[in-house]
Every structure is written in C-alpha cells, then in structure tokens.
Image (cartoon, rainbow, N blue to C red):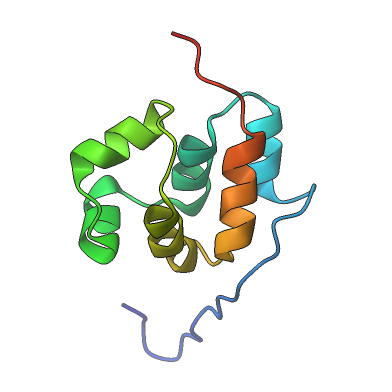
Length: 98
C-alpha cells in the first residue's frame, strides 16, 4: 500500500551480472535459492501463492535440490530477473554439503 503523494517504486528486470547483490551472496557461500529469497525479501507463503510451488518443494530448493525449468520460469518474474539469468545463478551456486 502506498501513502498519499508517495510515488510508486518502479521495478524492472535487472540483468544478473557479477555485481548483482545475489551474485555477491552466492560468491560468499549462500545457496542460489536462499540468496534470492533473502535479497528479494520474499516470504515462502508469498512464493507459494504467486508461483504455485508447494512450500515443501521450496524447502527442498533451499536445501540444494535442483530446480525444474517450470520452477525457474515461475520464480524469475517474481524476482525481476530473466529465467535464463535465474537458471545461471543456480548453476554457479555452491553445491550442498551434507
């Protein structure tokens, strides 16, 4: 909700580059999914509602499960990134240590 006289924040797709905040988090050891959730401030309930991805599956992604193409395409617009860039961020992220 915006207040009277307040200008809306314009959100646009931002290319995933070396200096992207998520890329920096990934370089410092965050898993790709956790980096995106933290940087974009997206609660799991919102992710589930807007992407139709079950919360149990979101937890799997958070713990290192490989995303499907459909999941990438559902999450990308929510985080203002292209599906290709989101997929690339998942590929370069550190692997899961069990």
